[in-house]
Length: 92
Image 1 (cartoon, rainbow, N blue to C red):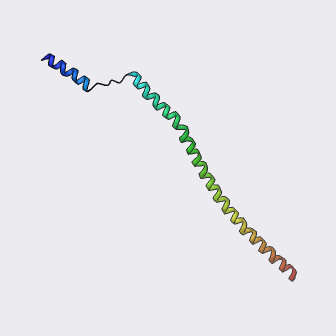
Image 2 (image 1 turned 60 degrees about the vertical axis):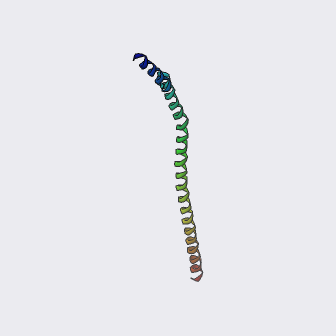
Image 3 (image 1 turned 45 degrees about the vertical axis):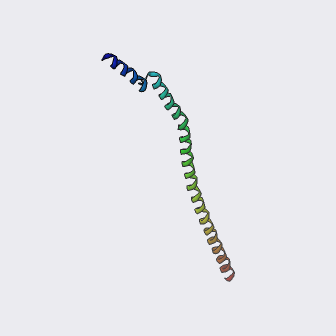
């Protein structure tokens, strides 16, 4: 019976080898994760900074366009007031 058990045990080891996790495997996994973080962190940080900067630029651009339009309206109003003032001065 023991010869059968030993034979089955050896066949089982050949067909289903046991994978043991040792310190080298753990170090390899940790170094892989560290490498991925070191490579991906700057990329994510730079993309985030670009996003926030472009959002600020878009906000400033919309404010600039609004102020430009207000300036145009104010200039038009000033020109209208000047014209009225010149006409009124010539009448009196």
